[in-house]
Image (cartoon, rainbow, N blue to C red; front, side):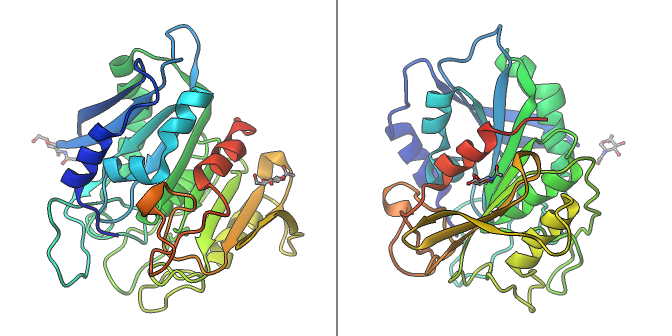
Length: 317
Ligand SMILES: *[C@@H]1O[C@H](CO)[C@@H](O)[C@H](O)[C@H]1NC(C)=O
Ligand SMILES: *[C@@H]1O[C@H](CO)[C@@H](O)[C@H](O)[C@H]1NC(C)=O
């Protein structure tokens, strides 16, 4: 989805922050000889003495941290529940095939199989994420992170990226929640990709949400773009998490168009929420970011960010 960064930044500035002492910082980070960016939300309840949980929240292809902040509305929950949200920005130069030129710079993240140009360039976004967590953010924000409670979520390209950090940072990330983006760690026939091994060091709880009518990252995969079937992505996690080949799914949430099935215990929970009629969207996104119809059709029968935090909050390393 092509967002207009300048426009979304304006919205960001206009929307009132949850409290006067919470803050959104825009950081310029020097990493790997390039200047990277990130937006970071720090809730007003954060203090220097208590370690605080962190949610990484990755943006979609041709999107950016400001747009992801608006779409996920995660800061509202972070203010209420007292956690930090980090929105890392990918490399400039997303490749999208739209008839119209992008209105400004666009960004992509290297989720392995997707998305170009980041994956074609082999951008070290996992390294960048580790750098933010291990060497940069705590000093910059003057906070201590709760190392047992670092989580990752993201939309579309950000969902691919979320799956990738679940694989490659299973020593760091306590649970993941990809939205509209699968684990794709093999080669793509559509572009140069950056295959990687998904060797986890411990079970990684996964909550995956996906629209059954998504035409951009289709639920049944896309042979032309080499996108896997979403069920294969989720079953892969179930098998990695030790749930066997014959996974026992039970219904864990049902409301209107949304049906979620779960397997495993708390520590290796794998959950897939299927959204009937759902397009390429973040369920329960605010206002116009949750359209009723079209390719980005978005349900309000579940609020993704609330369910994601509910899932994360019961998980720790
Ligand atoms: C960064 O720049 C230094 C000095 O120019 C060079 O030696 C190094 O290979 C570069 N590293 C990367 C990752 O490009
Ligand atoms: C797994 O996670 C889902 C989604 O949060 C939840 O509804 C379900 O109760 C969880 N199952 C277990 C065994 O913790």
